[in-house]
Length: 112
Length: 109
Image (cartoon, rainbow over all chains, first blue to last red; front, side, top):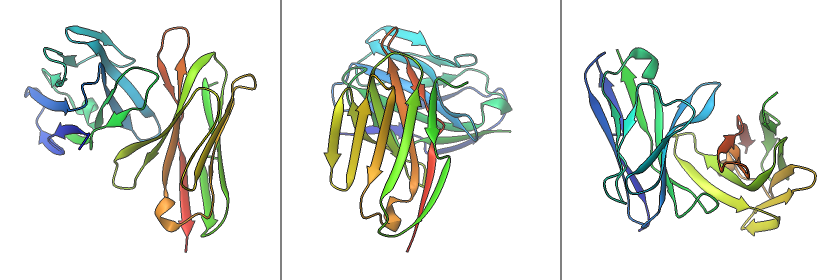
């Protein structure tokens, strides 16, 4: 089954404790991206990647890192999480920018 | 002014009604996505349009590139259609996606 798998689904952590949210797709997609969704602000892009070893900043990259060492995986890393990073996070992938996008199930992160 | 505007922001209708959600944009685009976000949070891609019209089951999406406008229609609406519908425009200048704020749809039985 074609899918984008995010883990974990829910995470509560403390300020400053490094965490990684994993994202994996099984469709051989070139393009992957991370979004955060906050009430009243809609979806905002954090980082995107057009291919292996190619990543670029989106609209709200501060406080986040990503890597794309292999095509299927695109982890989101919060080196030192802060409460303002409490949000709902989505990973998405598509073959290219103008093709159908597939989304992960979402990760609800709370930083206390 | 947002580059992508959706209307209405909220819509409540009775089961069976014909639903229209609008998306207008003020920039040049190469494609437009319509997505559905369920109450549980999951997001599903419904359509990706660059011209004309697409249909999938009871859902129809249209786009008029010259008028910078797209619509999502739901025929014979059902309570299970209750969700947030989001449009996102793919800029033709830099391939950035610009997201609408979403339309919250509630279909009452």
